[in-house]
Image (tube, rainbow, N blue to C red; front, side, top):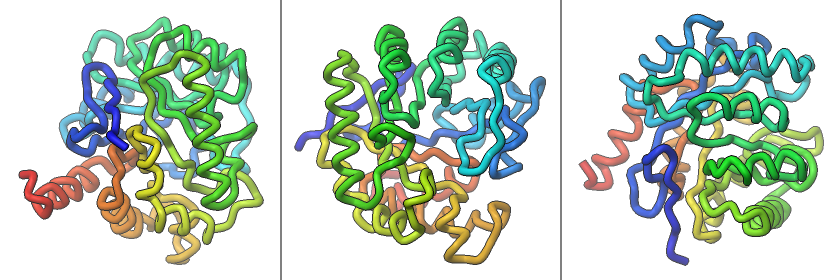
Length: 272
């Protein structure tokens, strides 16, 4: 199937474009990887540095989605993301926001944002309507009812079919698929994640750009016996393989190192 590209803030993703690099900035001190936390007042400098290192866009999140992370209120998430986005308004930095709450997204829409990163797969109708009405492109994750609740390759493909159908019904034409690699629900195992990685090329059969989001995740740590701080080498090794298997964008914590990886990949492929 001929792949359609997606345009985010004028940035072409998929459809023959270079692999795009999405740098992660978390405004949540409870994030599973402490190195990704950037407090208010430091977001602009961090985003600018990521851009200089090679990030094509920045993904802002204000609530940890890691299993077992402590809950925060909607008001707290709004306060955090509002402060972060205020620093980026008017800078021209391409920005997506990682939230699944309509009230938070509505607050984000008062700022200069270019895309939505939705781990819920547009499962909540009220939230989905806010996304659709915004007219913004969406990174949409394979989910039936809860974020990442598909277990195994067969269910993941079915979940992706579900989110594609939701996008069609809502009139969302610009979207990137995320196969939801990671320990999103207790029923999933590390071997489930490795199997999704081994079969990553099948996700391109939907004809849409595909996001690889594996940075420092649990299944890498399980294999290596390391905490998030020690998972960089494993992340980079896996990322190279996922790019070879068709990833059109990579979401990562370690921008400079991943940018070097992509330069090496492009050289090997004869693209640089």
